[in-house]
Image (tube, rainbow, N blue to C red):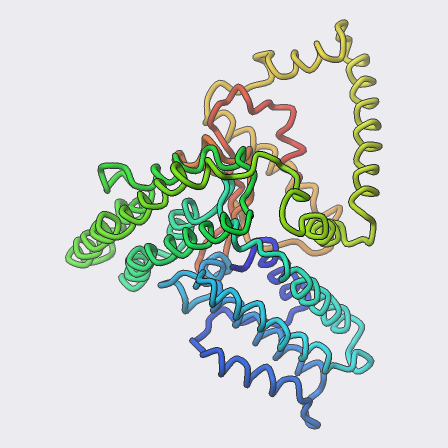
Length: 437
């Protein structure tokens, strides 16, 4: 499955490079994709390298979208809103092998025949693909779930951001509901294989996952997060179609998704969590030391070792701690540093009393930040964004806030998603830095 980070990198790169990535596509077989990549790897005399590079971006983006239909929905790419990724082990193995054909196209370019800007994007794509190829030895696919994400959240989240203006849009949602059990069980198979190989997330990151699964399938189907788009369908749709689609959605949830999620829940409780590793270090995984070093190189874009990065972190912690103590003294606080931390975490003045107050606070901060951005950046996104709460079914185990991308082609804004659960753990003093981040 295409990661959100990779999606963000591709969207940004394509937008800035103005390569005009496609916003819709049609199915191709693996053989058809291979033929098109091979054809691109053979330069045509009459075509400039710049034009060929743009065709490459178009082709590779369309391939990624077909292979990751949920990511296509997040990106506003049309044509695959009725399906989920193929998460079978065979499909994952195939996709790993297919990286080589894209690398062959990268190698076929003469960067001296590209403009400086195009050569930069060619180089970035090549680096990304080489990193992907290097990382294929590390089987992260066998750890597809933790409390931050996985199929137990992705089905409802994806349905929520799908376009919902026409009967066809809702038919796509029904199709996804009907196809979800296969995707759920493919993820279950991946975890079973992970157990055999000694590949699981740390148990601490799994403790809330069983309840997240159950949150998707309450006894009353109409209360399920999976049904919420159907509970509030546009009145502009014909009543007969609304009733038909609502009935189909309820049947898909009750007859297909609920049994699959309950099977997943039993597996998590009875097999997976009892055998999940208690350590948190990546080094405890098979090939974990090299795996972690690979992750560090990707996250930092440097050749520094994990130990060197750790030393930088320790130095930063010491620097920030010293600044905090200076700030504490300037504030007039008379107690110790430990007492100061308790004060910051418990004094009522630092917390909102209502979810609405917290959201209003984030909105105020967001708009003040927006007004400062033109001083700092020469080019800004045109797509607007809102501030909305984390869905109630996920709030107990979700992070403090995150960004949900929008899509022009679907008429969907971006959203800053803020967690309004347990307000006494959401201090005001963290909000500005978090929003800027």
